[in-house]
Amino acid sequence: MDSFDVLVIGGGPAGYVAAIRAAQLGFRTACVDAFERGGKPSLGGTCLNVGCIPSKALLDSSEKFEVMQHDFAEHGINVQGASIDLGRMLGRKAAVVDKLTGGVAYLFKKNKVTSFHGLGRLVRQDGEGWVVDAAGTEVKARHVIVATGSSPRALPLAPFGGHIVENSGALAFEQVPGQLGVIGAGVIGLELGSVWRRLGAQVTVLEALPGFLMAADDAVAREALKQFGKQGLNFHFGVQISRVEQDETGVTVTYTEKEQEVTARFDKLIVSIGRVPHTAGLGAEAVGLALDERGFVKVDGHYRTNLPNIYAIGDVIGGAMLAHKAEEEGVALAEMLAGQAGHVNYDVIPWVIYTSPEIAWAGLTEKQAKEKGLSVKTGQFPFSANGRALGHGDPRGFVKVVADATSDKLLGVHMVGPNVSELIGEVVAIMEFGGSSEDLARTVHAHPTLSEVVKEAALAADKRALHM
Ligand code: FAD
Image (cartoon, rainbow, N blue to C red; front, side, top):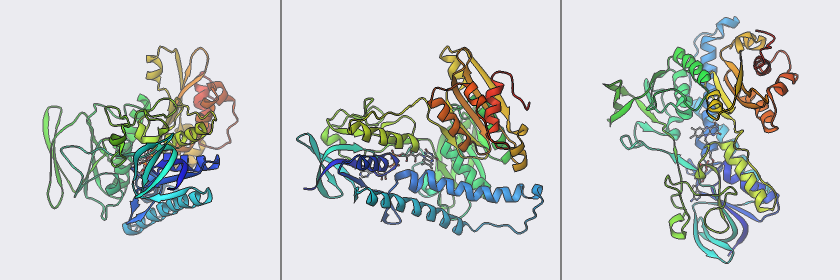
C-alpha cells in the first residue's frame, strides 16, 4: 500500500494549494480529486472549472461588447454591425479554464505531488494515520486534509435541471436567454446576471432579503444599486417565492412582493442562493467525522477536526466562501503541519464583486464599526474628480475610508467603481500592517491613476482632500 505524509482530498484552491505547499515543505504528498469537465479529470475545483475563472472570462467578454456598444462613440470610435458569436465566446472561456486547470496538473508534477483522479473516502484509522480509498486504491496517510469544497444550494421549490440552472449551467447557455430570472442578488447572481444582460437578456433578480447587498457598506450598496438599475437590471427585494413550474420552453415563477402575488415567465432561471458544504462520498459518517448543524466540517483554530490527524480547510469549513481564503488556509495548514506558525488574518479578507462598476471592500463597514462601539471617522472621494477615471471614460463610484477617530487606525475601506478589484490590494496590505488612514494618505500614488482616489479618500477622512 502506498504511503504518504499528507493526503489531500479535493483539488480546488484549498486542496491544490495545500498539496503544493506541503510538497514544498518536504512532505510526501498526494491529492485525490473527483472533478471532471467534458468527461476528463480537471483539477482546480469549483473556482477554476465552474466558478471564479470562467465567470470572469465571460464578464470580460461581455463587458467588451457592452463598452463597444455604449462607450466607444464618446471616444470618437464608430463601430457598425457589432454582433456576438456566443460559441466563440464560450470557447474562449473554455480555453482559459483549460490553461489554468492544466497549469495545476503541471504544478503537481513539478512539485512531485501524486495525483489521483476519483473520489477520496476515509476508510479507517491506522496507527497515527489513516487509510484512505483514493480513487479505488487504498493508500496510507499520516495526515489527511479534507478540502472537498461546496455545491450550489438548491431551492426546494425549484430543483436544478432543464431551464433551472446553477453556476455551471449559467456559464454555458447555448443562446442568450430573452428573459432571464435570477433568484438571489448575491455575488454570483449579480455577476452572472450582468454577463447575460450585457449580451442582450432582460434580467429580473428576485431577492428574499429586504435590501441590497446587506453585507456591504450602505453607501456602496446604494451606489451600486443605482448603477445596476440604470443598466436595466430589474430588482425585486423582499420577495417570497411560492411556486416554480417548468415546461418545455421555460419557467414560470410565482412570488409575493409587498403582499401582491406576481407571476413571471423566464426562458432560463438561475438559482444562486448560496452554497452548501460538500461532504458526500467522503465517508465522514462511517469514521465519525463531526459536522456542524449546517453540514460544515467542524474545526478548531488550527483546522483540526474531531479526529486525530484529519484536518479541513476551504469552503467545507464555512466562513467566507472565497478562493483566496481557501488558498490561505491551505498554506497555513501545510506550514502548521511542518511545525511553522501558519496564520490567516480573517479580519482583512478582501471581498470583490466583478460587476460594472466593480465593488470591493476589506474590514469593517461604518455601521459595523459603530455597532462595535468604536468612534469612527470616514472619508469619501469620487472617481468623477479623478483625471484617469475621466480619461478612461468611467467616472462612476467612489472610495470610502473608515478609520478609528482616536487612533486613526484603518478599520475598513469600501469601493465601488472602475478596477476596484485591483485597488483593494494596497488597502489590504496597509491594513495587514495595522496601518492608519494617514499611512494611506502619505503614501505616494502615481499620477494619473485610479489609485489616487484611495489616497484622496484617506485625506478626506481628515477633511483635507486636495482635489475636492
Ligand atoms: P472547491 O473549489 O469546491 O473544490 C473542491 C474539490 O473537491 C472539487 O474539485 C470537488 O470535485 C472535489 N471533491 C469533493 N468531494 C470529493 C471527494 N470525496 N473526493 C475527491 N474529490 C472531491 N471566489 C473568489 O474568491 N473569487 C471569485 O471571483 C469567485 N467567483 C465565483 C463564481 C462562481 C460562479 C462560483 C460558484 C464561486 C465563486 N467563488 C469565487 C467561490 C470559489 O469558487 C470557492 O470559494 C472556492 O472554489 C473554494 O475552494 P475549495 O477548494 O474549498 O472548494
